Amino acid sequence: MASIFPYGFLLRCSRRGTSLVSQSSVSKHLHSSWLTFSCRNYSVKSLYKHGEQVTVAGKEYVADDMTNITPHLLTHVGQNIHLQKYHPLNHICQRIIQYMYKKYISSRGNPLFSVHNQLHPVVTTYQNFDSLLIPKDHVSRRKSDNYYISEGHLLRAHTSAHQCELISMGFDNFLVIGDVYRRDEIDASHYPVFHQLEGVRLCTKQEVFGRHQNMDNFKLFENAERTKERQGVHYAEAVQLLESDLKGCLLGLAATLFGQDVEARWVDAYFPFTHPSWELEVKIGDDWVELLGCGVIEQEILVNCGVQDKIGWAFGLGLERWAMKLYGIPDIRLFWSTDSGFLSQFKFDDPTTDVQYKPVSKYTQCSNDISFWLPAVGHYDSTDFYDIVRYIGGNTVEQVHLIDTFTHPKKKITSHCYRIVYRHMERILTQKEVNILHKKIEEEAVAKLNVIIR
Image (tube, rainbow, N blue to C red; front, side, top):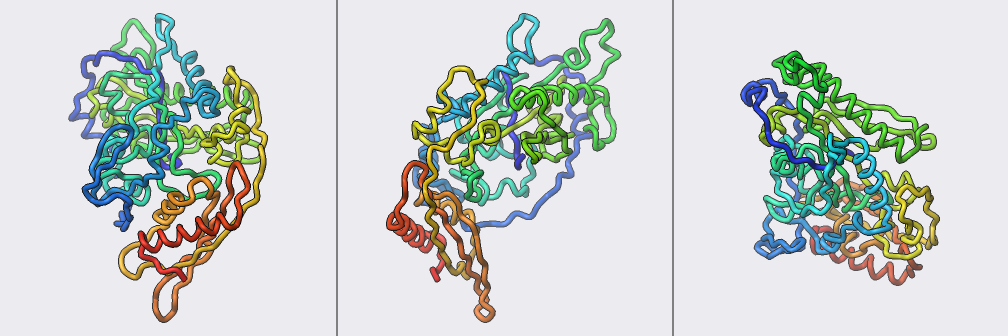
């Protein structure tokens, strides 16, 4: 959603009931004309050789032409900072989980939702894309946007990648929490690893309409035209009730974390796996901030998972974004800090404790520029360069900005100039240290990207 969103809730296992609508009638009326995008092929250079073994979280894979994972990124896999006691991300998780536990209770007084927060981060391309109806030529599949381990496997780009397998296992209400990976720009709000929480809720006819003496008068499905308000297979009243449940749940969640007086608004959105879809924005200070994406799950997804007698909703949110807004944390790199000056500020047992982050120290920035001619043959993408910067500079790199592009009028070759801002989170960096790192970045860019330093 900020691109692709995550869902999640407590999971409950239920037996699949008698089909109320045939798969053929569902498929006939499912919307299939998704927006498509032209997909470019990038010459992303891998640090792993073709045929080399790649080990990720205890599982082994074989590198191929699609592999673009880096050893530096793999050091983040398995750290599970969202599970660490007293970590701000863990506090956010606990607050959301407790809210969902109280919001949805079974007839026996137990929480309906189950939590899945330790699922393996490597998924198949089918799980990450196809199971969610993401078109083959959708931009989100690009090698420049994802960390591929091989042609068929990648580090999940969103927690939604686990949605179908959990639904197929019989879970109707669940939360999925975990680390996700995307190749992105470098600044205070972007990091190649972040964390998502996804919620999914599936409902039977009785759960949507309540129990009545004659349930035959109530319907979940019909064969109609797809509109802006609903899928063609869904009965209008059922969708309205499902939407009301979804939005009521999420407005309550926002109020629980940001205060009962928080201003909120809904914005229509588009996601391949839900329709209708919305984004929830809340007003923080003078700014409207997007907090999550949500919608009614495409019925085709449920049918493919073996569910034909239920409809459902899903939502997804980024934990870092919520934590940064809630606690006033200014830099996403801080979530990976082991500095006691940062972590000690969140050492409390009650996750609802109201606290604002206080900067431990603000060390001086050092900035160096790097300028190079792009390769005359093949393709170049800035995300490849960003990966090299992260691989060499690690968390000492605060920002990278493309500050100038120049095309030679006669030679018809193009150069890029990037400004790399270095700042250590826990100590002062010397210019000598920065120069050494910068030189290594230049050398690696030349070797891996075929650029020529100006």
